[in-house]
Image 1 (cartoon, rainbow, N blue to C red):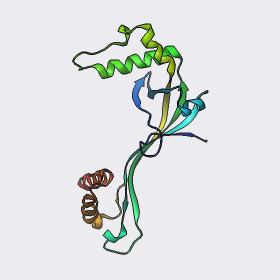
Image 2 (tube, rainbow, N blue to C red; image 1 turned 90 degrees about the vertical axis):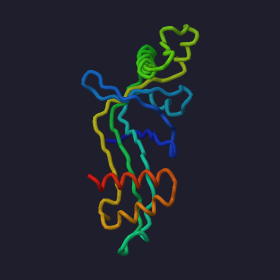
Image 3 (cartoon, one colour; image 1 turned 180 degrees about the vertical axis):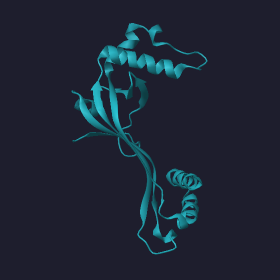
Length: 179
């Protein structure tokens, strides 16, 4: 089966925010994009999609190993496969109400979309709402698992780099070795 891909990585593609919802026994990713977003032009019908959430990733030098070996790349990622459905304007508005209600909880002066004027809410016509019904989740952590005797040095070298991806991978390797 061919899947359309929605890359959710800030570094490698367009950023689309999602909300996870469980409704009617289904796991859903719910979101919206600007109608002007070129991705929306592809969403005229229900289709199978692959959503990729790319976590931290970094190069691992084989010079950090005790024995000769090729270098590698450590990473964490989640692939969600599902069925994309474009929402009607009414469904999009209901989705936005749920989103705002969820995120306004705890605010000092929480807003409620029902208090907004029709003029302001017309902006909803500028977005495409969608839901993706998830039917498969694949999560992968490649964290030098096969290099246990080298992990302390890998962590040490990654922490010397000071970039966010290297630091997060170092911590993930450390956490993995504790379990």
